[in-house]
Amino acid sequence: MKKIKGKSRFLYLLLNKRIYIYYFSISFALLFLLYSFVATPKYVSVGQLLPSMSSSASLQFLQGIELGGDRITRIARAAGLSLGATSGDILSAVLQSRSIKERVIQENALAEHYNISAAKIDDVIRALGDATSINLTPEDVVIIEVEDRDPKKAKEVVDSYIAALDIFLRESGMTKGKYERIFLEQRLGEINDSLKVSEDLFVAFQEKHHITHLSEEIRVGIELYARLKAALQAKEIEFKMKSGYLREESPEIVALKQQISAYERELKELETKSDLEGYGIGSSISLKDLSRVELEYYRIYRKVKENEKIYAFLVELYEQAKISEARDTPIVTVLDHGAIPQKPRFPRKLRMTVYGVFIGLLFGIGYILFGHFSEVFLQHPENRDLYEKFRATLANDFRSIKGIFKRR
Image (cartoon, rainbow, N blue to C red; front, side, top):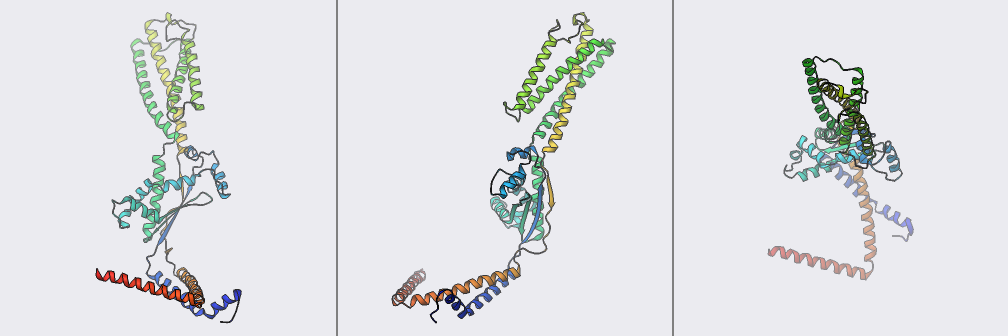
């Protein structure tokens, strides 16, 4: 070879022995193309979810950010910063949880599909995890991709992920609104029963003693007392309810304690205006002047009014809890259900051929360079002697190993 220096020498070398590049490129291209015909095709079904609960209280609690934090978090993420998790991050984590995967495996009989024993559930979960890809776009859209040799099975698994997520969010999430609704439903049932008993007793007492009404002043006094008593009981119920999920130093708990104390003071002042302990309406009419029948009538009537007021208070709280539950319940909007893929993602014949040509090109260049540098290296006598000794040593080692296996 002529004495050529620099890059020209390298180019001249490749040009002079380009036949090896052609050989390797064509050989690898044909090999990869042949593989694309015999390889098991892999189909990918894709589903897309849009979190529709950025303002839900439950997810705000998990995220540790205020309303609108999703957008701030996405902007920060695009800038390479981290300000917490978005709704999409939380959904992605739930989708990759073991409970969701086990539900998907059971619904689609994936242990049998993957030819893995059902007892080896960890292996089945690992296989499903390898076939599944959960990604998040900058717009906070969750992308579910499932790869499988069966296009229909890939679609079924994607749809199972979506269904399992929806069930998990609706049935397993105990939001503040749901907790309050369940608590108030129980209390409403108790108060409703008590109201029916007191109303029945009141009607029976009226029929027995032929009393149809009290004086207007006493009636107004009873209404006032019943309203305060019912408000106190409603606040006590609300306090007990919110103590189940709020800390004692929470502003809501502190405010409820103050309101309860205020109602207790008002009731105490009202009751002390009467000579009869525990009774009093703040009217100018002394309860001592009432007959025993009238006093009993007053007591029953007051109980009815208390139950009516407390029931009305609880109904209002119950309606608020239902609205809160509906707002807090995470809802997922399905942008795209899984579709049956028409073409396999792998292998693609054209793509595989291009890969073969590229890898063959690299092999051809590497072969040429290796041959050239080997030739230059062996031009020195000491290097050639070292090479011959190395070959002889390897040959002896192989013969020794071969003899060991023959004796066995």
